[in-house]
Length: 215
Length: 215
DNA sequence: ATATTTTTTTAGTCTAGTCTAAAACAATTT
DNA sequence: AAATTGTTTTAGACTAGACTAAAAAAATAT
Ligand SMILES: [Mn+2]
Ligand SMILES: [Mn+2]
Ligand SMILES: [Mn+2]
Ligand SMILES: [Mn+2]
Image 1: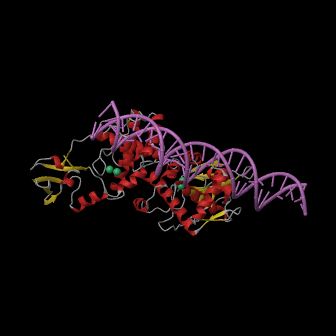
Image 2: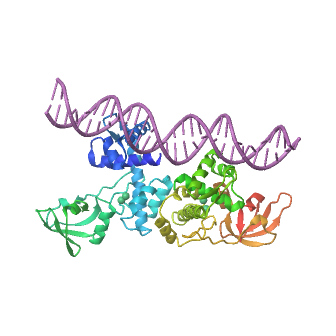
Image 3: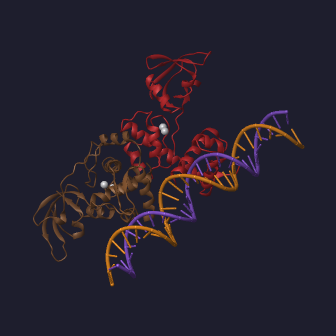
């Protein structure tokens, strides 16, 4: 499988995780910052290889085979991110682009050894689940901070947005995975939140709250 | 720089290490298992980027810029090999092909952090020197076992051939980097060697002897 | 039901990197 | 010095993956 094919599969996988319905050509094009015509070409190729179910004009979905292939790429991505943070001391906002490269290294043996070396982690540095060697994923129940009620207390276990900008903002506010977060007040006017992070009280916007997962 | 450009640079670098004279199109083609016409195309491209000195029909050599670029690829290759053996417990005959992939990961920061993580090693699992971040190489004096005289004793510090077959043969004979080797007898008829590896006496062919570096 | 807009596909072009076959050049032999 | 052989380059073709522009199909508005 080529670099490019792998990227398309991964994109379709991520889009399927949020939509149920078949994935449109345009949705893929937008996410990959490419043109719809390029997507059509690739979908034909992936369909030929039985990695996707594709009917002209009707969108696309992954086959079982495609799903597994996509999961293995996600597995690699998240294990490499974990390696970079845990072993090489990268910060969580630096690792995504590197993992975009490393996820294409072809070797089952390597990734399984890396998995063992890291102690078989179930989540990556952003709180996202790492599929195991057979593709199984342990889902933890979590909800967005923005959907929690006043006075609830929880632990930050993940981020929805994994952009460097957002992660750096969290660093600045000293919000990390594992931080205890309590909702002190919800401001109805602008939907902002007054929260306590461990011992410190801060105000965050709705946009921030809707990108933090709490358990 | 593309994957392919990097591979050409690396090949020219390795050929220059053994030849002094300019490198021929055919030599490159043979080493890369490609066609001479493909090599010519790439040499033009590399010359355009001032990575090689190339004059039609007269062979090619690396510029300073090309040399440094090549060294950085070799650095990555050998650091990744070291990582695979030291940290992930791969054996020395399995790592080359994986390093061929990993050497193309683009990130100075990553490779420097990996270097630190490994304790800034100066040699890879095959005894080959690892260039440092600025391209410097610590050369250790070593000679081929085949060029040593009778009764000399030394330590095996490297292998010339790094093929899996050869390395597995060495494993079978319990010859490893660090093994003490003494030449007991040189058989003039077939140029074979009677040697002592640590405490064990064995016979090896000239071909084996001419692929082992001793200090 | 028809017209308009949006989405998707097709057709054709481009680049990087490869190849084969032919031409040009260099080295070697006679 | 000429002929032969070997090496290198050029010319032209191919593939993967991207693109633009046009055509086709689907969705939406009138
Ligand atoms: Mn990521
Ligand atoms: Mn992640
Ligand atoms: Mn190697
Ligand atoms: Mn090596």
